[in-house]
Length: 335
Image (cartoon, rainbow, N blue to C red; front, side):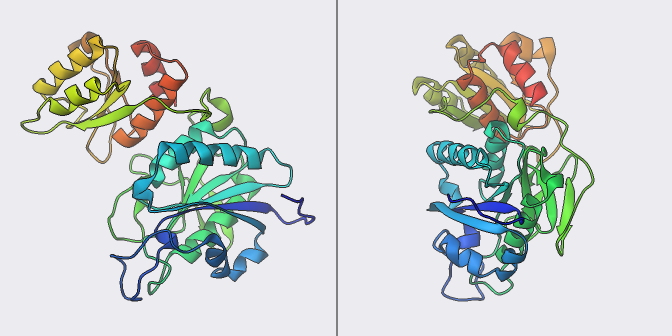
């Protein structure tokens, strides 16, 4: 990229597809559209006010529906962001993404980006062709946040529906509403509106430059199994036979696990498979059970991480050769 000779912030917009780049034949439709078909140049053209906020460099990283996000694309995205942020002529990054797996991508980047410069993800609940499409304003707000010095050292952020969330805390909470993202336990970090950005708190757990994690190669296989009434051990046995390195349990309540699954997990631990207990409940935290369960099983509490983010952290921990249950627990308590 050629250096941009301007005093304005220089923001790279990396597009990956999603509903924000979606298209439908009927403007009244907000479902049944095709995601990821509108290119990044068209997205930018729809928001002429961006030129008043920053100098933009655009790249099309992928054109997918985020339900199809892959680990390979995670790695490529993390590496490209790190390469761009290492350049003096880039002041921040905005990633346009689908909403389905945005929270997982954001948390992986939160742990693997090695820069204090802002990285802001945004998305949309309505395709670009819809009446009252929310993508253009979300994109403008995301660039506005990324252009602010106050966003430096905040880790990876999500700008959506005028709110600013930490990647660690945020989760999708609605299948249709334009305020689909929330941080259930601790709330948003701040807000953005009409060019004004205000942070009302900061993320306290280590992130970005203060983690030992990177995304330089393939990540170990980690799968998720849900506990429910009458659960079978078939999924756990199949995953172990397939050679997975870790299993995250989406437990009931406080990460509780059906007795049938507990026995299957005990057998998995004997095969060296790491086990983390999270919860299928939408908020709250999973307490470590000590001698009652975790100590005997050798399992780990996910704390406030939902099963999907717990999977991300477990993959990165195992990739960093953190394999002892006590060390994995310390990792979950820290990040």
